[in-house]
Length: 126
Image (cartoon, rainbow, N blue to C red):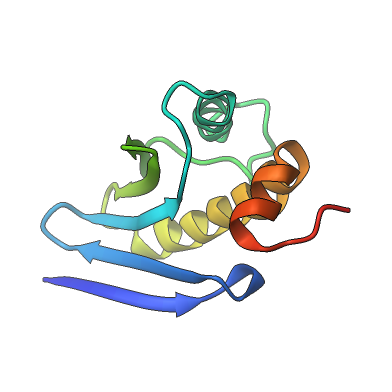
């Protein structure tokens, strides 16, 4: 079973989420445009995602590697993020996927790369 969902979310932006039951995967396709593979944004975003699994994070904000795996891809400057569901715990996966995407936009990008956010998502720099 597969499905593709289109919805408006953060800052009324369009999002595309695909579900692949065979792979047990939730994928945010074409999440971030114009992210050069060798850029600081690309490197820091990959590190930010990896840090979400750190034991230094509070347990309620941490991603559990036994329940969820995150795959980052940058194809020709367009970032997609895939969440692989472990042990069939889709409720956990959806909750954590939405939380991570929210944190990427509202926290990571907004704080660390406000010029990128303003240029690509029409949000004013404050």
